[in-house]
Image (tube, rainbow, N blue to C red; front, side):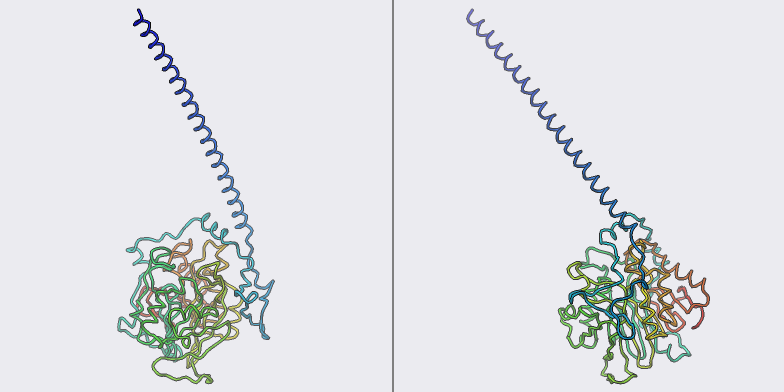
Length: 450
């Protein structure tokens, strides 16, 4: 009897225990469900808040894009000029150089929005297709062929070989000048990231001619001032080469071991007689001496902005040979009326290298890069007898179709038969007078004489 009573009590205890476990399990499930609902609610709320923030930011950026004003080059003239009215480079409180034309330039976020909210139309194909549309040839000095002879003695002494992007080897009245050298695969602080070349340079530093007298640098951006290329040039030519650089950039070159005597930092309109290699001596006071002039441009500088934005100047270069030949290098620039001043002071110019690419989306890029139409305006402003296009067909920097710069230039050339020649050579080709040598594929925009 007592055994039955104990068994019943044990069963009742088990039942009570099971019931307690069920109640606890239900409570636990309810707590878990409640926590899950709270978490989902908080997550949903945060997502809604993030979406609202993104919408607000997009609205602000779109508003910024829609409120971008055109640049008025005549309404508010450049604030610092000389007695003759030529625009002078100047600093803001002695710290950074000022670009007056960029006073209404949109913020970095707005510029990024311009890229994010516009279609990428570059459509760069595979290398096999690029070999057809953008062929690269070895420069003439590696092919052991001579450029076409010219009857005009001035043009005999002036030819320019496009090595790629803004790198040009200029031979002028017996002197040799290299512009904005970049031979690296990428234009970035490191070579494992950043914009990568889709067309190679025409040659390497080691394949350049034995004598290069000078290098000119338009500004300090990575696609125009490449660390590895400068090191290689200095290693090969040592003190036989002279560096003509924008004001404020001297210390960068000195940090690489380049002799201070070989660095010539200039501001707008300053000029200097070009030291020549091979023991050639020039009289600094002679009008027949080859010289280099730092001419204005509409751009900006910096390698780690905003830390060093506009700490160094920017500009373009005019090379005047010992026989009077004139070559102008545009580097990288937006349009401005200053090119009319260059043409007034130094024109007519025999041969000009003018940037034609990296210009879309236009509302934001117009502050830093010319488009093909503006390149033609510069061609006229300089009173250039002949020009050719650079700053395209190397790095993907903007959104226009990769062949559009060339196509638009050639279309304008065809529509304006009275225009002085504007050529669009292939990489590696040499422009000399009215001819492009070493290729029968070059589209030659020769449409009359001045």
